[in-house]
Amino acid sequence: MGQTIGVLHTTGAVGSRPPDRVAVVLEQLAVRLGDRVGVLRAFERSEVQATTDPLTGLLNRRTLEDQVSVLLRRNIGMAVAYLDLDHFKRLNDTFGHEAGDRALRLFAKTLRDSARKEDLVSRWGGEEFLVILPEATAAQAARFAERLREELALRVTQSNTPPFTASAGASDSLDADRFEEIVLLADSALLAAKHAGRNRTVLASSLTGDAVTGPQGVAREVDHTG
Image (cartoon, rainbow, N blue to C red):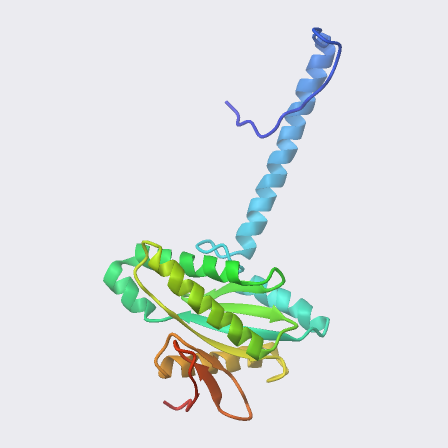
């Protein structure tokens, strides 16, 4: 038997059935509408699959880059938050890949819930995530990352996921002209956060050092070489 995907409703005189010829036409119409709806739903599913990461449901890297291209063509400034799960390989090795997948899904949902509706939230690759904040500054991206870390800490304690944290780096389009360079700066800031002990956010700056906020919100300078 086929699957019911909708209802075709008609009206007529109370207590009367439609003539046989009308019933045949309605049945044929229902079949055609069902086929059409099925095609549209299949197309929608394939479109979603082509633009999102299957594990987390976030934008995939290619789709993010396409949407960033639109922002660039419109000369819309942006900030980048580059985020990475701390010691993810250790979590996978210790608790198994299923636990690793749960951690990725929990982190992705926390990202999605923390972002604004206009923000572009993506899984950049592996345990790395990229959030594009249109018309925002690097400082705002860093504050977003800090709020995210706080929310993540709360959700981890309420879940069946092994404990984990995340580090972040933030930059914006005032730091560099090309998107690739903005991402590279955020990545460098992320690496600085890792070197500084993880579970913190680094604000990239090409003029001074990197302002780092740790778990207690203490700001200090970090040398990228260490």
